[in-house]
Image (cartoon, rainbow, N blue to C red; front, side, top):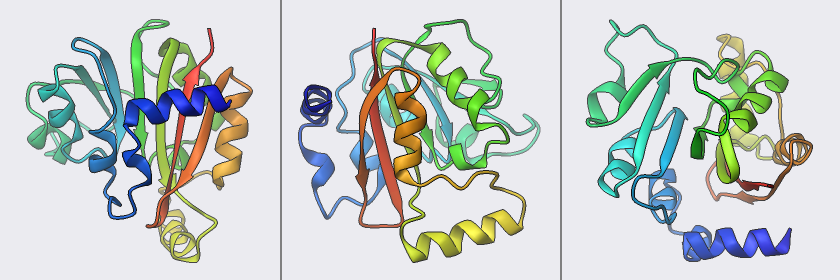
Length: 192
């Protein structure tokens, strides 16, 4: 695991531990990616698709909303591909993506076992998984999470160590980084 952690930190260029960088987009745009790499984005992605696309990556954004709805990701991520789907049913063939990035969505899945196995299925061997979600170890995060759960937006109660365990069982080597804000990052590589 230390080798993987070192490799991933190398690709992030050590910027992940910068305490001033609490914005997920600032962290993720430091991740080294090759031109033409296939990246799947899901969740609360902001303008990240556009940024990754400008770096030469082939970005696909998976939305679970009606195309007729005006959604933020459609408006702010031009030149990206869009598909309708959920983490439980990712509409791509096996070993398709080089990176899968899931932002504030994993705890909102109805079936975490299906979602985690689908992520593993579509990710190539030695592909990277970047998962960001609320850190339930922090009280501020618990309050936000409870508000979402009352509204029916969350289905799971996973702490960072739970995410690590779930994906370790699916042949991922990774680590958890707790951000200064109310979130954590799980960064892992799928073993060959």
